[in-house]
Picture (cartoon, one colour):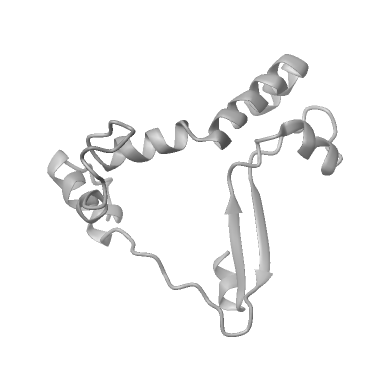
Length: 134
């Protein structure tokens, strides 16, 4: 992805390709025991269109040197402080912080429910497929 970006080629990681398993199995002509878990798409940006970089966490929270750096509760609070500002304390998900909000938003979404259904279908229809995962 980094090399593609350096050449002016954009990319998009799609991690929810597990949705609609039956459709993707047919569309991609997948053999038995193959289950798509992600997809990576590449393409050129439109003329003059290039996405702006998103805000990232400060490197002091995500870069470890020589040994793994364990974050304290205070570190995590500081790391997510700017994102937490956007969470309404009276949100409909009942989340008390950004982590709870994001978890509830993702796991309660239609795509997540469909993804879980597709995985169950795979297991029921093709239980031997699980052996290839380990």
